Amino acid sequence: QRYPVICIDGPSGAGKGTVTWRLAQALGYQLLDSGALYRIVGLKAFEAGLLGADGCQDIDEQAVLALTQGLDIVFVPNEASGRVDIIVNGDAVGEQVRNETVGGYASKIAVFPKVRQALLTLQQKMASRSGLVADGRDMGTVVFPDADVKVFLTASAKARAERRVTQLLNAGQTADFEAILATIKARDERDENRATAPSKPAKDALLLDSSCLDADSVYAQVKKYCQDKG
Ligand code: C5P
Image 1 (cartoon, rainbow, N blue to C red):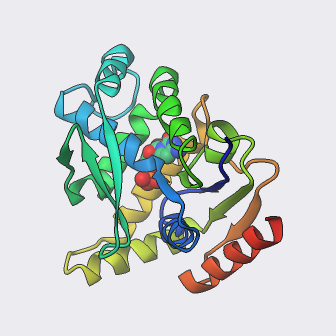
Image 2: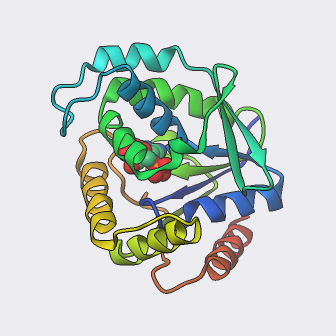
């Protein structure tokens, strides 16, 4: 049996997480936070001392692959946070995995074809059990090319950095706009220019720029698009 798949791709901070969560709740579908998979591998690789000082050149791909193959990852929806809790090999992963530092680790290991291939199988399996809303960079292009609905949600780097600053300040943390903007740009650059599964819209994706839209308008537009398609 084939279940419906909705892909929400785009750069970090464009608002994918919120739309994905709301669609999955409204439709009763499973949620695939593919970025979390890359984040976990990135964090584990860092903890294992496998990440180089800056670039990806010196990283031992085979070692990162072995580490990836040893991971059993489960997503559990958490209504209080509006996100999935992540369970790795039976243990809950802390909020730390969501921070920008770990986002940077993720984009370093995300360049490796063998690591992507290992995660691809795991991601496709999720669509064999129920309807799925998948959030990522290559959901519509590589992982689910036959998906029923594809959306590429983007926003200017400045708008995304501003959102991040507001988020941090609301959480009682400090935030340096320029530093955040630079990190966002560096991650975009790595994600868009890697040879394997670069971040880009699928040919048949709806392009939506959320720079001047709030979360409710983005959700309303995506929901309407899903209805029109379905
Ligand atoms: O979406 P999120 O910010 O959690 O993703 C973290 C990183 O994981 C991205 O910057 C990207 O390098 C990588 N990623 C990817 N393919 C995906 C999802 C995330 O390469 N489908």
